[in-house]
Each structure stands twice: as C-alpha cells, then as structure tokens.
Image (cartoon, rainbow, N blue to C red; front, side):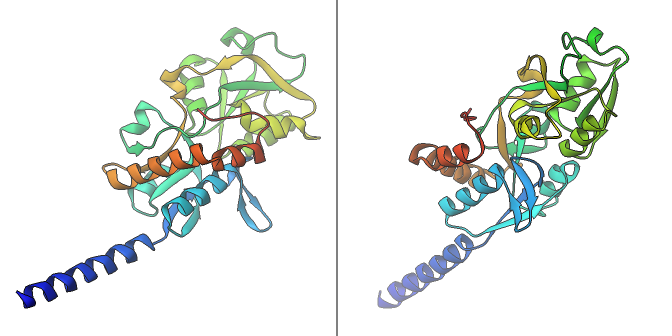
Length: 254
C-alpha cells in the first residue's frame, strides 16, 4: 500500500511538472503588421490593437507571447502548417474560412465603406464605378465582395491595405473598399485630407461575416476554449475597453 502511494505521488508530481511546462510554452501568434491601427511596424517593433489584444490574451492564459509577422496571403496556410498556434490579425469569420480553420467568438466588428476623392462619387453602385478603378487587399472579404457584386469594375488587388491607400493618394486608384474603422487615421492625415467616405455601409454577413475572430487550427478545441475564456475575461474586467480606447474613439466590440 505504501509503495502504491509513493508511486501515485510520483506520477502526480510528474504530470504536474509536464502541465506546468506546457503552460509556460509560448503562444505563437501570427500578426500581419500592415493594417494600421490594428497592426503596424513601429521603430520598436509590432504595435497596434491586435498586438495589444494578443499580449492581453497571453497574459490571461499565463503564457509568454511569441509574435510572428506574417503576410496576409500566407496566414491560414501558415497556421495549418503549424508555424504558429493562432492568428490575431482582424480576420473576419466567414463560412469559407471556417472550412479551413476554427474561430473564437468575434472580438471586433465594423462595416466596410468606400473611400475616394471628395465630391467625386454620387453613390457606390456598380454604375457609379463605370470607368473607375477600385483597390482592395488581396484575399480579404472586401476582395470577395467586389468580385461577386461589382464583377464588371476594374479591380486591383494589393498585398496590404497600406499599398492600396498609397495608390489611392497617387491617383492610380479611384476608390478603396476597407473596414471603415481602419482608415480613420488615413483620412485624418495630410495624405488623406482630400479623400472621404462615400456610399453606404457594407456589412452583408454572407460576405463580411459576423466580426473578426481569432483563428486556430481545425479541431484545436482546447486552445479555442481557452482563448474564448480569456476574451470573456478581457471584455468583463475592463482590459478590452482600455485597449479599444487607446486606438479608437468609439467602441468596436461586437
């Protein structure tokens, strides 16, 4: 009986050590770094709303954060190839993406809108874009939406939203479709002062999903549930609200 007890204690200690070691493993998080103010490269490294959310989640999970900058096109392939454990990159939850990855609950949402030169467009119907060129980020929900609903326009795809906005300011584009909250800083800048929103808000769930979520590999139920629990705590204890207020004048909570 004594031998069994000693063996049981030894096993418990071993399993406890393994569990603690796993808890201390870094959470490898993919972040784009080219989608301000959600993520961007500053002199001291990655900054932005998504970066702060990732760090807060790691803190809630009591795990070190290992941020990995990843171009948008390679986000989901990199996750599936196990280059990282999660994607915190303002990735909208859509049915097509849910075939490839699992998502947490949404952690922010904003409608998309067109921006272009002031007093240029009367509306944003396909007819309003006759002879015009629209820019979007390649592989984004805005790309999917324009491809489906504005199939006859001259559509140009860019590696990042910043690249599209650069061509807009250089007059190589007539308009850009983007999440409205993500271009407020641009519109308030010297480069963006000649531009403004036009048309209506676009938020059809069939194309724009139900908000941005954190992506994990298919079947990684444990991490998904842990991240959902961590998000719930951030939402309820004021940490999410503080991060939101750091970057936006209004709440983007879903």
